[in-house]
Every structure is written in structure tokens, then in C-alpha cells.
Image 1 (tube, helix red, strand yellow):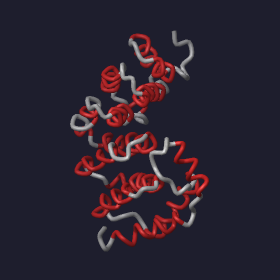
Image 2 (cartoon, one colour):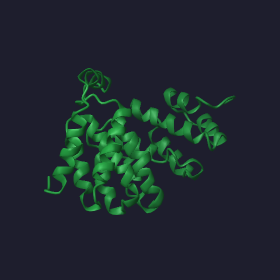
Image 3 (cartoon, one colour):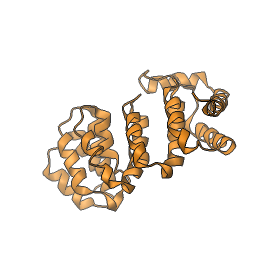
Image 4 (cartoon, one colour):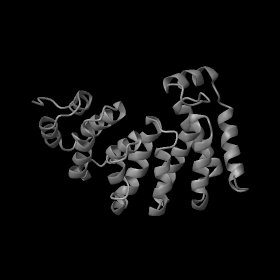
Length: 229
């Protein structure tokens, strides 16, 4: 921790610590299968606190952003990883291709759906929409990786692309992992197809009809499509 970043982190830690709730912390820990510690700050309250913090302390300068994000990621309580994601979302327009390597490290560090599902579509998806040349080096490689969170990130980075979705790439990724027995991969497939169906319902209906997807993926994909067959 550098001299300049230390006060920033201490101010956030002090603010969050003032709003701890031990009972909700216990419930939150159980909800995420006892993998992480919690302060017990409910999401709406945490977002208000983060907004207050940023108003009073500003956003980190670009040259300190990586250090601050990783320090927040290293803190034991899960709320600090959520704060890191809030800060990243506020600073994503300043991210460059050189930041992609360390951002991708966050996917496989303290991995669970609650962080990956923000990182992939909101942060990394935004970056890839503006730097499509990175797709070959990152999601094209992630879908081949054995780490299920990299697989999920590859599938979900286009979640909010709507009509700009690269359909061929999306369907290729899904076919590559359609036989996965991992719940979080099956769920991601269903989720992205359900979302894409809002823009291209016939494409999704045809794809699901012509490919042997896992029941969970198929059920999620067709959840809002009528007369699917």
C-alpha cells in the first residue's frame, strides 16, 4: 500500500465498518456457501455508502486504480470486492487495452457468480465492445480453459450487446461447452440465450431446437419464448 492509496482505503474501510450488521453478515456468509466473510451491509445501503464515499473522496487516479482494486480484492469481507466493482464501473471509460490482463485476473481470484457476473458483462464486455481485437486473446481463450469462471465469462461478456451480439461467436462458445456438467456454465448458457432472445427470438428458438443443450440451459433459454416448438 503506497502513501497515497493508504488514506483512500482507510476512509472506505472506516465508512463501511460503521454500518456492520453481524446478523446479516452471518446470513450472507451462509448464502454464499461460507466461502467469504461479510460485514453484513445490504446492497442498497452499500451502494449509497459507496456513492457517498466517491463524492467525498473522488475516484482513484488512473495510475493508482489497479493497486486500489487489488487491495480491495484482498480484503476478507465480500463488500470490499463489491466496492471494487463499483469503482471499476465508474472508471471503465478510462481503461485501456493494457488493463485487460489484470482485469482478467480478477475473474479467477475469489471467484463466484456475484463478482464474475459484474466483471464479465459490465466491465469486460464494455472493454471488448470498444476493443474487439482483444476478443481473440481473451474470451476465445477463456472458453477453452478448464476454469469454469473463465468459461462463464466468455459466454456472458456479450450479455447486454442485444442486436450487436456476435451471434456466430456466441453460438460457437455455447456449442463448445454445451455438454458441461457445471451448474454455473449451464446456467450461463441459458441466461445469455434468454437475453439474446429479446433481440433475436427466432435465432434462439432455432438454435435451441437444433442443438442438444442440457435441460437447465434449454429451460432458461426458452423461459420467455412462447410456442417454442
